[in-house]
Image: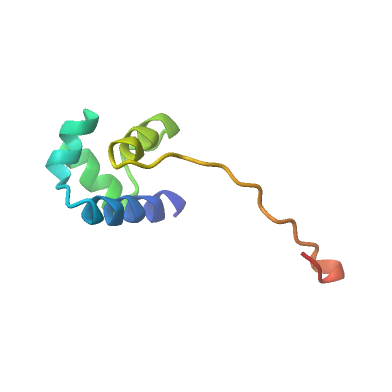
Length: 77
């Protein structure tokens, strides 16, 4: 499910940049079909390196942030 959501986010970024799937394919070395499958179903482009290549072509990067820890037993985050 997370890859499908990421694919949708990349589609949103691509559309915001006014780049077609074919143009993004040319920038990344993927096929238009691979980009379509990833945007719509979270398939084909599943490694971090490949996702990073897509993001770089759109002017973004992967960044890790620490999640807040929640402790449900004591009702505190």
